[in-house]
Amino acid sequence: MPTVRSGPVIGLTAQLVVLAVLAVTVGLTGAGWLAGVGYAAATCLALSRGLRRAGASGLGPADRVTLTRAVPVGAVTALVVDSFSRPTPVGLLVTVAAVALLLDAVDGQVARRTGTVSALGARFDMEVDAFLILVLSVYVAPAAGSWVLAIGLMRYVFVAASAVLPWLGGSLPPRLWRKVVAAAQGVLLAVAAAEVLPQPWTTLVLVAALALLIESFGRDVAWLWRRRPTSRSQQAARPRFAPVAVALAPAPAARLVAGRAGATPPAHAPGHTPVALPLTDGQTPVIVPPLLPVPAMATLSGATVPAHWTR
Image (cartoon, rainbow, N blue to C red; front, side, top):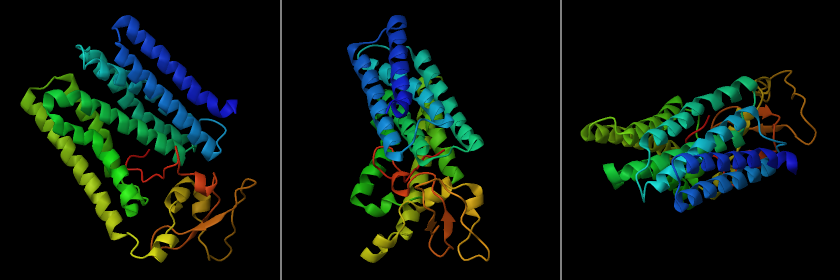
């Protein structure tokens, strides 16, 4: 399927070109090359699989912005791994990270303005964000203390815990504060990496970043705990993909409330049957025509989207 795979392959090619430029200008060790190429290959494979599972014909406009942003994240990864064996150009590392952080404010706007918001795009955006935060925390940790790794690892610990505690994998409602905290992590880590502040102030900035992250994750965990299924029948009945499906539905479809006099389902693409989905406990169902088959909407590489970071 050349159409489906062309986007990820272009991203892989762009990443290799950027790594080659870094090798010629500032130099890259073998470890740096390995880290950068490994990151690029993993991104290409995961994105290709996500497109295939979602049945998408290619990348949307916002996905292309996210893929562009993933390239400087790969460059930061290579530079950080290089820093383990030799001094790294801090100014270059922070500049490349800043480019990735600035583009993070673009892909969501593009998705909303072009009407191409998707679960795949949200998951892709989230993974790129999370990995950049992890890599920056690894770079800052030797100078600030290993406790900084908690900033980069918290999201991955949350995902791992959801494999043991299924109720943690529930879908969360949109919350602006969650997005603000997620964006703040990258900015504060970049400031710490730039070494522009005295060490006590750098430590204070990192403590503030970790405190904000703990508060945000804690609030989401508490929300999921209060709404966790308490019996097997409730677990079987709980709609796993409903919030994502409603978010992806066109605005007119979201207004067609089941049972309203004269409401009729909107037209839909062949093979995409309208589905009545409940929003949250106690609310009225909504009839939506899914833009993608419901079981495939919330996957990038087979996992659901609890989405602590979303567009």
